[in-house]
Amino acid sequence: MIPALIIGLYLSIVVGIGIVSVRYFRGGTADYFVASRSLGPIVLFMTVFGTAMTAFAMVGSTAETFDYGVGTFGKLASWSALVHPACFFLIGLPLWSLGKRYGYVTQIEYFRDRFQSSALGYALFPVLAGLLIPYVLIGLLGVGSVVGGVTVGAFPEAFAATRGAIPPSLTMAVISAVVLFYVFIGGARSAALVNVFQTVVFVSMGLLAFWLIADTLGGMEAASAAAKPAMAVRAGNIGELEFFTYFFIPLSIGVFPHVFQNFLTARSAASFKLLLVMHPVAILLAWLPCILIGFWATGAMVPGGTVPVVPGGISSNAVLGLMVAKLTSPVVSGLVAAGVLAAISLDAQFIAIGTMFTRDIVVHHFGPTRFSDRALVNIARGFIVLMVALTYAMTFLETRQIFALGTWCFTGYAGLVPLLLAALHWRRVTAPAAFTAVTVTAVTWLALFVAADFGANRKFLLGGMLPVATLVLVCTLTVVIVSLFTRPPPDHLLAKFFPIKTS
Amino acid sequence: MSKRALIAAYFVLLFVLHQDFWWQADARLVFGIVPVSLAYHAVWTLLVAFGWWLVATFCWPTNLDDIPAPADSPIAVKSGPLR
Image (cartoon, rainbow over all chains, first blue to last red; front, side, top):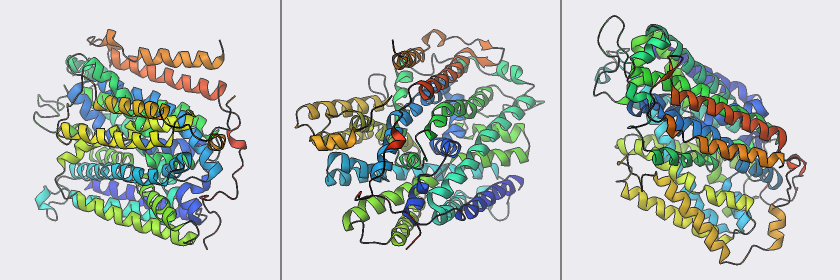
């Protein structure tokens, strides 16, 4: 009952922040979609970090370490510490500048203008929006699973079928409603303020769990000494080539539509400086405690006995929940569950889906003067509600494949990074190359996805490497070769997109 | 060698040093707590943050804020109160 109350309190605070943020809502699409491009460095950093981190930062990192050892930090967290800021600097900053100058709100608007091709936008829309749906789906399923785990036995009469736990379908409905509420009333500004709160909650709750678990296990030294030595090394847990090719996975952040929209909320270019420097530090603070909890879980015993905290045969996704539930108090269980909910931020994805539909389909098709500003905001809101309802309905389908789909979403987005980098930094890239690259990358992604048994084969590798490496290579080659064999872009177009000289 | 080239070289070095194959089978614990490879990657992450501080300090683009937004942009986001 106590964890359920704490989760309820957390959700009430989120709703409260949403209501307060409405006081700052300036009205119109500029505020609803990109918070009037007014966010300073601290809010930008916390919003982007909160959006970039998913439930995987807490639950998945602990589970992966339990299964494959501490190399999890190197393959996912430390690569992200390097690659994410690189994307912010090489992609986010120039896009922010172009977005401010030409009024872009979505990536597709930029691509259409950069390559003077309306068709390219229609080709990109299903790819970018389509990959967002499973991303949202994974978040919702994660929410249902976490809350179900910590509320077992809380409501034995009301929810007898789930051993007293709040059923995932109810949790997902409540979370969807809460996120919809503050997204509906305040758009990007509400989402940014909520994200600041969520980032503080999930980083601090991870540290709190780490500290209390270490204390119960007799201190950090005792906890590490009891852990399996085989999980302290990479050898035997992950191949060296596979470890290296995890470099490509965090590239996906450069193409995430919701992160692109976060970039556009920045007040000035200088706002990005704090984001670049603090993002790696925040990754370290968020991931290291959870990695060590996963490591300790390989040898942790319930205090005063010889019973392992994590019994054999249990899903590794339950490791964090079990470590917290068996080694701390119900209050801490509730706080950590709130931390996991805070890490699962769906607001930015919701807004991105609504924005893309409104701007890239409705405004592009009917023209910018066909609808009033108020009507455009309402169209975005309506489409968001429709997509959330559709996504919620999809959670009732078979879910194992959907979880596997997570990595494939990231792979798909990462595959398009060479095209975006070329558009921003290579004057010679051409529209036919862009169109071919989108098509070839999408077809290759689909072929690899089918070859991996629709994501069910979690260990699908090509030559010892993750499929994302192949996808990035294919996209790069397509962009370069087709560009060199097609007519260069006209001078007036290049003058528009390459006027900036860095110091 | 320019500051920009030095910083680029620093990042290339970090990129290479990420593949710490020399620790891959070493199960020693630093201070009896953190597996050596994990401790290495934690320090590596802080060195990355330092690298981005160098970028923000010594090779930040200077004129990104100076570009005015053209009023006649056909797809510019409307601003101001709701109509």
